[in-house]
Picture 1 (cartoon, rainbow, N blue to C red):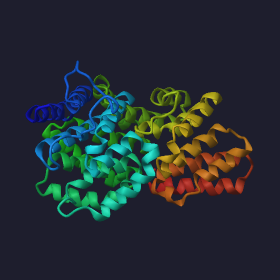
Picture 2 (cartoon, helix red, strand yellow; picture 1 turned 180 degrees about the vertical axis):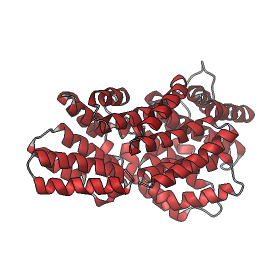
Picture 3 (cartoon, helix red, strand yellow; picture 1 turned 180 degrees about the horizontal axis):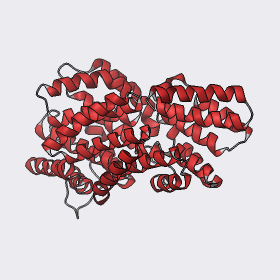
Picture 4 (tube, rainbow, N blue to C red; picture 1 turned 60 degrees about the horizontal axis):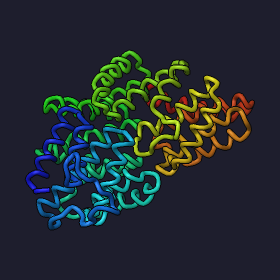
Length: 410
């Protein structure tokens, strides 16, 4: 494809994505650009296509253009949150695997094969955070942070993201600033720093609205939505969920839709409305198992199993827990392993084996990095111990959960 046409398509797709939230249109345009053909043209894979890579000299305009097209496609997939988008990206990423920079290869591997590549990518993230080339430390972390978010490693990027944010506040690029704010809001929410998370999200939302970056604006609203749901602020959460769903649904922004389902399910579970919780979570989590490439969906496995067990859907609960293990959800991160084991323990009902599985879920002290979810597992474990008449152990788990919830301000 001629270089000017490539950059024109990247620009058009960027605007469709960020200004309009039209994930599908942006994705189609970018995939066509990466393939170098038109909508009706051939889309040859590794066996039938060229392995020459992006083309052009490394660092040249054509080379950078193809890298930008691939990265923007990845970004569209993240927000689209759909398997078909990821599958198309996987095909083009593999086609160009031999001709991209180490940085882009890192992004591609963690998103195209999250479960299998998680451990290796985590090591590479640490290496790149400690040894990035001079002059790159200010712009690189936001993109690296997207890879880290995929495998729950944002805490390792926190300091560098804050440094990058201060640089961007001093006159850097708008998109990098917004990306930093979004990632820091996600990290702070998951780590239990909810006031800090809200601050980052609100700063980013005001900036995104002023610049008419609607995709970021609604992504940041999702963080505020999930914070409200975790706090049990039903009125705020339901109002926000309704507005986000109305925007995201027609545009098929799957990440936002999943956030809405997750938030509503958390509220339903906290209110004891298990039938509603099952209906919400079953809409998000496929019968064949969650897609590890879609974090909000993956995080709902425990919710679905709990709701299924509470409504007498034992077989559905067991099938969901087994599917999570089968797709390798437990390999993504310690957090996902904890939630997968907790789902298996819940699916085991009141059987004796459930106790050991709950204990295994909580065995890694590192899961304290995700206090809200760890406390939810402790709450479920405490309930099982109480029903099994292990009252002293039950009090220990329930007290730990209560202390965490109170520390979070609940």
